[in-house]
Image (cartoon, rainbow, N blue to C red; front, side, top):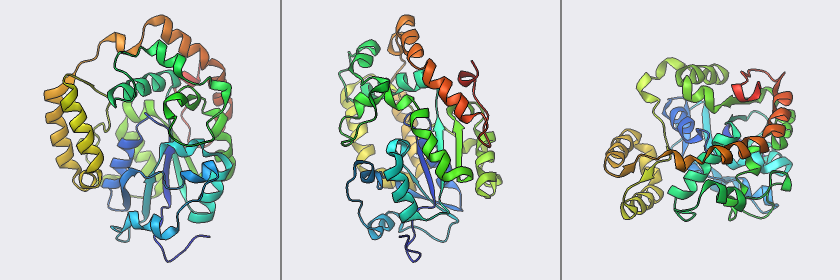
Length: 307
């Protein structure tokens, strides 16, 4: 049951990985009417997905001690999309029937390649792992989402691109409280998408300046492994500080890119045959998704759903 005396999220960004969720969380958290969690990916309600106990609302609220009367309290966890009915039920139970949810969807092949590069740069797989090898490491699209925990997330890259397998339940339960946007439009017209989101949330878009919309959590290749490992450690252990001082973070991040970013070559994105193999895997899931979204409100279907 929702505790009306405790300040809990009424706005969630629930998916998907490598689709701009960090950027959107950062942009919305800048707004004076949005209180964003200082840890971007809380995954607080995720245990419900595995039929495990979710900690109490007092623990949840402790992540929003900086709340100061804003209209929205925001949490972002890209894995929520895949949580199914158990997660939907815990959201309704804990957060009530006025919570709003945003999903960002990205062309599945591009998302998978970005996820692969993310796993390499986060040192989660060997640096010499090829895209084709990573595909072969992954569970098949039709094998179903994992039911245990988050420890095997590396194997879930292909499955997580079959958005239609998970989205229908959210559309049925949240209806006009669900907004679906696309990575394509967020990347190509960030101000326009932010204006659309602000209208949906009934908050003032004019607060934002064009320079606010820089890309967050960009996947970059590195020159020197030691410096990269140190940067990852610092970022992970000081996230709440950087969330409070995002301008300083952007400045220091720019310095880091200047020192240690390695321009990736085309091989890091796979050869043409491997990419074609990936695209073929997603032909049928994308057809199902296009049919599912055809009449959903506030949708501008991207090119990859109009083939």
